[in-house]
Image 1 (cartoon, rainbow, N blue to C red):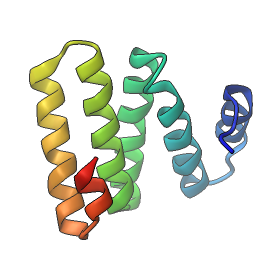
Image 2 (image 1 turned 180 degrees about the vertical axis):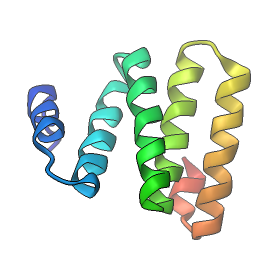
Image 3 (image 1 turned 90 degrees about the vertical axis):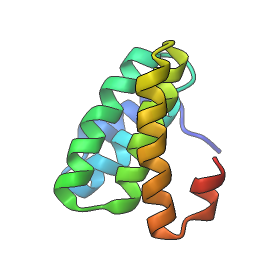
Image 4 (image 1 turned 135 degrees about the vertical axis):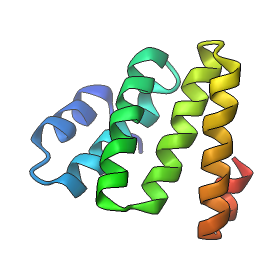
Length: 102
């Protein structure tokens, strides 16, 4: 069962360390990718920076994918394609065929 927006926001605000914050941020981003594309893009950009800092390759790929999806929905097709290609490269490097397929 998916969490509702208030619960996701609470998880994000109450995260006590960077790993928990990143997980909460990506969960919130996944919610916004379908309803608030600008907020989703902003959160995904922040998540990307944190994932890079933590050297979390799977989260870097996830963030690039979400940035691309939000940009696509905002009709920023060139930038979206660049982000989706970066996500694809990371998913291939991880051997994540599910990520590649998305």
